[in-house]
Length: 389
Image 1 (cartoon, rainbow, N blue to C red):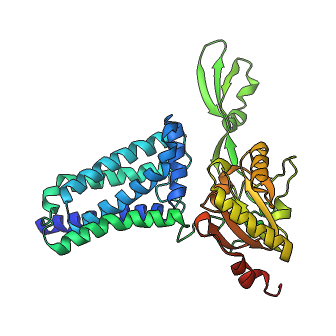
Image 2 (spheres, rainbow, N blue to C red):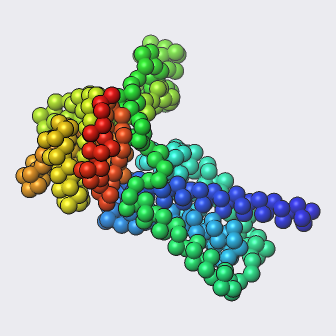
């Protein structure tokens, strides 16, 4: 019996450790994306002053998950690790419950964009983890290993502490190693935006609050029940309140949605920019205030040469106002045409502000962050000078 309990305890330990490691690595792969999710939570709890620290918290929390998981597997500092896991899961469980119950955040970001979960799914997952971690907490003395004394153990401890943070800093400085976003290299944007004919539509429900003017009785029913029961034919029942339409079943969702590009006059250019068969350099700087001006200058230099020598169209997409964009254009003498879009799809296009995308015939060929922009010669040798298909 004791052996069976020990085996179950070890399985629980391994499962919890691997889940935390996986969760942390997925978020460290895209720390900027997780920081956007944290900013949503900061807004919900009126903690906007923490926005400048969003990336720091993103990398730190994600790395902490990996470190706790590795330490749990290695039996280093197990008592402290189990305490840390318990505190983290209590915090996450509260957060996911609050998000689900009050419907304030649509996805929790627990596994980044790799495995999107609804708040209720995330809360259920955290409840299960909470139970498992409580089991580990109760049995923490049985899980404890030998103290860290040997030089090898100390080196491995430092390694487990440093590598997760280094990985997060690397992917933040450059781009996610594995791109789970809908705008990854190889995606045909026009195709990914298409909605088939007769595709299923979203189904909505409205809840009515009714009151009987004679008896004072009250009841609630959905719009379907309201019509099915024909209660509207009874003049004694009146609608006192109706809820906002709520989605009860989602219809077809294209891989890319909500992408609309406009010029300063409100004219739509989405199809023209992403649907033409030629090379296009698309710079993305959703927030011009936080964009690196040196990187924008380098992108501008690439655009000037590409336009003059190969007639490559170069555009800048931003969520900033036309006034801000025009001011920047004058300061940097921008060659790129400026267009406007919502910040949400722009943040997903490239995890860099600014970032650069090379496209042809609607297909994303390559993406670069501001820290590793290509040289003009590289673009010429690998793309522009090659025979056109």
